[in-house]
Length: 125
Image (cartoon, rainbow, N blue to C red; front, top):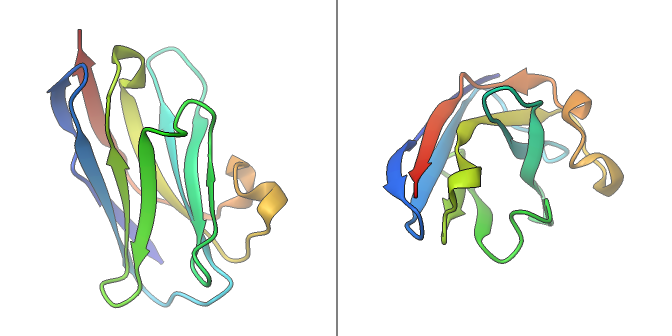
């Protein structure tokens, strides 16, 4: 499985960006897909995740109400719509895939086996 993230860029505070992750290779119904981010000098943190089958979602508190994760089974993509962006959202955003995911581990980075290369999001104040 290979993941290719895109859609990052420079945006002003209050603006929006849509990140997309294309999945190459087989995707099984048990898969979970997640978005994580890492800001300069900080540890990687969970942003949002979605179960491939059923579409159940999970969000970090910082993302709730502003970000929306979705998946398109036909296109094999996972998108992250980010609205009302803040300077503190500035980070490299990574998409990730897990063979199997359960609700309690959707936000745990070690539960994900495959990682994309990351796309940089910069939010100016």
